[in-house]
Image 1 (tube, rainbow over the protein chains, first blue to last red):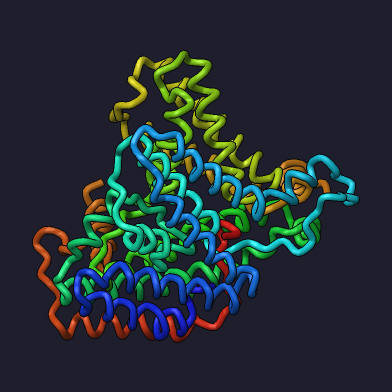
Image 2 (image 1 turned 135 degrees about the vertical axis):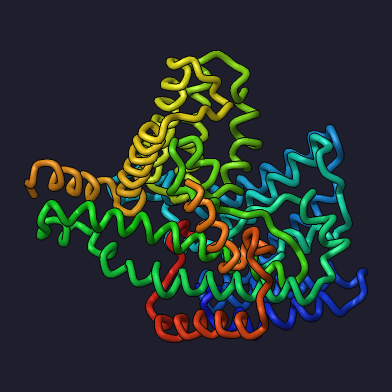
Length: 397
Length: 59
C-alpha cells in the first residue's frame, strides 16, 4: 500500500512538505494541489486503477470547477452531491447493485473492466461535505486553488481521516511555523504508525488469514475465536496506523488533521465505541445522514430506524457486499439495544452515567464481544461467516 | 483507572500523538529521542517487506 513505500516518503512527502514550508503564502495551495495530482497519478498507475484510474484526476478538476457555483441556500449545491454519489455508484456499487438483480452470474449489465479510483471512498465524502456545507453557509468558498488543495491533499487522500474544509482552510492560510516541534512529533508519529503496521498488524495476518472456508472446516472450534480476535486487533492496528502516518505526514506541512481513533477497544458501550472508532467517518455520517433524517428529534421508533439506516450506509461504505450490509445491521441493532437499555434505566441517552467498576467491566466485555463478533461479517462473505458460526457453536462443518 | 490513564498518556506521547509528555515528565533529550527513533527504525527494518494491503476499505 501507498504509505509503506519509499516512493511515498522520498518522491512525495519530503519534497512537498519542504516546498510547502518554503514557498510564499500564495503558492502554498498550488504546491499541495500539484503534489497531490502527481501523487494520485503515480500511485494510480503503480498501485491501483492503472491508466484509467490516473485519468480520474479529471474528477478532482471538474469538482473544483463546479464547486465555484455553490452559494449559500442554492440548490445548485445538490449538483456536487449528485456528482459525488454518481461517482461512487458507478465505480464502487455498479456491479454489486446489478448483481443483486441478476445474481446468477449472467449479469448483462456487468462492467467487466471495473476499477476503483484511488481513495474514492474518502474523496467523494469530502466532495459531499463541501457542497452541503456551502449550501448551509457553514463554510466559506475559498479560492479554486485552495479547494483543489483541500481535495488533493495527499496524506489524507487514500485512507482519511475525512477532513472538513472549515478546519483545513484556516490552517492552509496560516500553517504552523514551528518546524522543530512539528517535524519531531510528525516523524515520531509516522515511525510509530509504521511499527504498528509492520511489527504488529501484519504479523497478525498469520492468524487472521485462516478465516476462509477450507481452514474453518478443518479447524478445531476453540481456535476460531482466536482467529477472529486476531483480525479484530489487526484491523484496528492497521487502520489506526494509516491514520497515524496520515496525521504525522500532515504535521510535516504544519497542517493539523483531527484524530481518527481514541482507544475504541477500551470503551464500555457501543455508542462510545463508535464515537472513538474512525471518528471522522462517524462525524460525517452524523452530520450528513443521521441529522438530515431527523436525528434524535423524532419519535423513538424513527430514531431507531435512523440509527439502523446510518449503520447500513456505513456498512455499504466499507464495501459493496451483502456481508457489509449485515455488519452495518449488526451494529445498528446493537446501538438500538444500547439506546433502549439506557432509556429503560432512566438515563439520558446523551449523558454519560458513571456505573460501578463491575458495571464498567461488564459493559466493556459486552461491547468488545459485540464488536469482535461483528468483524466476522466484515472479513468473510455470508456463506463463509455462516460456516464459521455453525462450526463454532455446534462443531459441525 | 489512574494507572490506565497514565499509561495511555505515555503511549500517546511516545507515539507522537500528543505534544507534551504526561504531567511531571520532561521534554525529549536529543539523545533519548535519537534512541527512541532508532528502536522504531530497527523494528520497521525487521518486519517490513511483508505482503501488506490496506484492510479497512477497498478505497
